[in-house]
Image 1 (cartoon, rainbow, N blue to C red):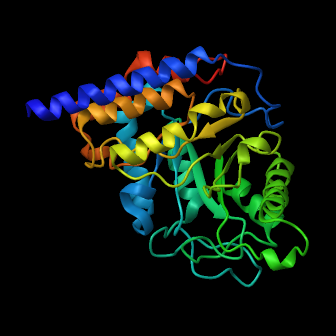
Image 2: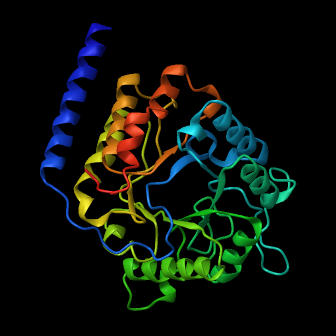
Length: 320
């Protein structure tokens, strides 16, 4: 136990020193933000992926939203309840529209959105720029305007947009990054054309995509690193891959080092505390991806630390 505490103390000292160096570097003006006027501070909320993967269903989403109200997370600022991949049926309907899985979402997504909105919260959903999602459900390629209209009609407030299974061969002479920019711009414009305020989150975590260089005019946040894992090394790697990108973030346009792992059981309480503090220092989205109902009091206290949240939500939007 003594060695464990010593190790955590040494890690915290290392992270504190890294934060100091990042702050000492200073900040410059961020790139122009997305023109939809949304996410003036980093989004806060919950996403089901790392707690349920493809086992998401309406009951889980609604129970989580209610628990966030009951346990104080909503009052602390967590207001997005986001559904990730696997929510849809394996194919579109005869009109080409997306269809929620009839077993897991028997009353559809609009009913879930209505429940979430009734709690004073907002609903997010997942799609993909390719022909299929990463889990091989229907993607939005060639259906951008149709799907954006569907999301707006359902009452969706946030779209996480991935980049699996893109048909790069349809774009001869263009690099993968150029194709991604084209397809992300299509969905960005389609969402704005609906007239509904919808936060747009770019999820393209492959090294070399560099979305921080081009994402601000078309999105509200973009992934900066590979997918996070619930261990200290992965968390520190995602921090190190994001902390130097402070020039590219600001109100309405945020660097996203991936979802918070606090509560998933793979790290110590001290490591989770460091994770939350570092994400806040980077003005990163604070989106939990754990089973909210099983959080310990100590884990919930990390999520609801008002002082750390205030750093993350500083209206100046300066990434440390």
